[in-house]
Length: 305
Image (cartoon, rainbow, N blue to C red; front, side, top):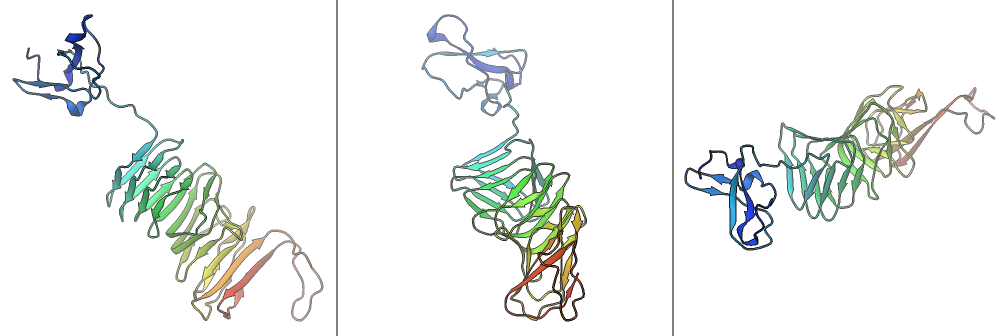
């Protein structure tokens, strides 16, 4: 009997051959139903027996929308964020799981905001040509193409970033409302380091490395590199170094070689030896010191504290 024009109100509700009266066979998916003036097509994802089924009609919609979760699961599928658009995966728990040969792609000019962790597993691909805003941790055990990406670490959680092999990014931004970002492997920036809020914690085996022609912006007592930072190239450069609650920079004039490598670190404690002093050195600070090391091609540079 024609009961109306909404396909969502029809459903397979009983198997006539089973007997025993009316039986609830569950709610349908909205994509499987069709209605016309002469035909109703109602489907089930799972029917375990053959028989004569009855289509019933309800005054209310029988469509049961899928549960809203805090995760995006890309299992062997393709998820793409187009240019000039922003996609947000919300939820503070694990928010993006890419596995079973899935692909996540963020095109140039597009943005992906992930409020939890990212897990890239099982031969999957994480391809970011635009911007990734991450509030959780980066857990990669598969394939990536992120050398043209800009990663922004944000939010209030304690964050880590790094892999066994060095990670190369076009840009790195730290803009946290609370806590810091700790590197767990070498991270190479080819274009821009932006320090807005929060500190980047590094170590000798977990370096932040800026390539030739890379620049920095921002920096303050609330946002600096706590630990060693390396600059490669022939650019005059100010290292945004600090420790604890002190922002204490050290600068170099332009080296004479593009393959010169200067590594700088600030310490908010006395140097191990305050004496003796010689030559034009008059005194050694009992409060603080900087360490500046040159590797790569030997190169002259003037130093400014």
